[in-house]
Length: 180
Image (cartoon, rainbow, N blue to C red; front, side, top):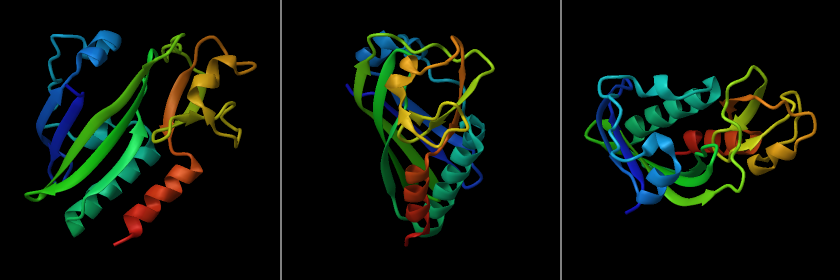
C-alpha cells in the first residue's frame, strides 16, 4: 500500500472530505502517522489555514482558483520531509463537482542516517516547500540540498524552518498558474 492523502475542498477553501491511506513504512518511521492512524479532525476547517508560509499559501490559493475556473487538472512533484525521513511526493489537483480534490501520494521515502533537529528555536531558515532546498543564513541567495544542513558552518544547535519557494520553483508555479 502506498501512502496517500486526499482532501475535497470547496471554492472557499473548506475541507468537506478527507481520507488517508498510510503505508506501514510511513507509519513505522514517522510518529505523526503511527498506527492506528486517525485522520485529524479537519472537516469543516479551511485548508489554507494549514499551509504555512504566506508565499506557499498564495500559490495554493491561485492553484485552487485556476482549477475552479478552468476545470483543468494540475500535477506536480514536491518534497515533504520529516526530521527522520526524506519524502518525495506527487500532488494532483482536480476539478470535482465544483470543488477541488487534492491528492498527495508518497513516491519514495528514504530514512536519513542522522535525523535533522526538530524545529524548536528562534533561528529561522527558509525552506522551499516544493524542492525542500534551504538558505542559510536567511539573507543568503544560495539554495542548498536540505540533507547538507547539518554540516552548515555556524548553524545553531536548534533552529526552525519557514516555508517559502525558491526562485526556480516559484517561477515554474507562476507559469503554470498563468498558462491556459
